[in-house]
Length: 345
Image (cartoon, rainbow, N blue to C red; front, side, top):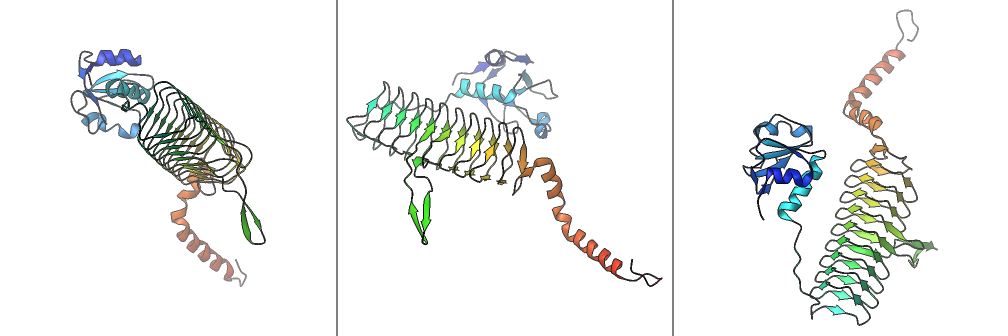
């Protein structure tokens, strides 16, 4: 890694320097852990006290703040920080191996130029890989899968037959894309498997976390929209439609045929029932249970999920419910007792 001056970093992100622009920056860190020669960022007011104690050489902020560090003023500090991390450290490097002799590649498979197929991976019949794809050891690509350019499939991930993968898609270790949907017809007490004849479509720039499961549909397709990022251990049911640029935090569960709009954010362990519609730009708090449609732009929390403002007020009362119950019983008792005139209150 080559150190860059603070001035060079500001130019790279379209920002402005307040302080020593010639200072050399050779690393990145948090406000709490940063030392001289490192740059950090500030975009959450709850970390404001750390600005006084940080030893960082520079801090990225949206506006001037009180700190001993030099400042890099940027419109979006976190995005600027990301750009600087990439510039100084880069993304993970992938070893170039070509097509390993220990990989199993079907004769009818077609690989784009610059692909790297690692040991013990399996590329099945009729697969089409774009350019510069990396398929790590133990990964399985089922028959007829189509994949765009610059995709990464990490170790032991599985893509079932017929799925369509866009360009620049990342599928992390042990994820499963295109498994059979959870579809059964119950007759006379027995559960009969329904063939799942749809497929899974991952559009461009999707990232699938480790140990995720994405089911193929019974009839229609399961679709993950462009730029959506799916965290670890997320389960997406058959026929679900996830819009563009959504963020699904780890352990989210989305049932079959649910639809999410674009730029939705689902916190950890959110559960979404099937056959409902969640609008665009919706935020759902951690561990919420969503059982009804949610309109565009809403923020909901709780189980069952309700408007966040109402939910916060309701949950704030929970710890006082025993005292309230006791007080209500006392009032009921008093109302049931006769007053001095002999009449009940």
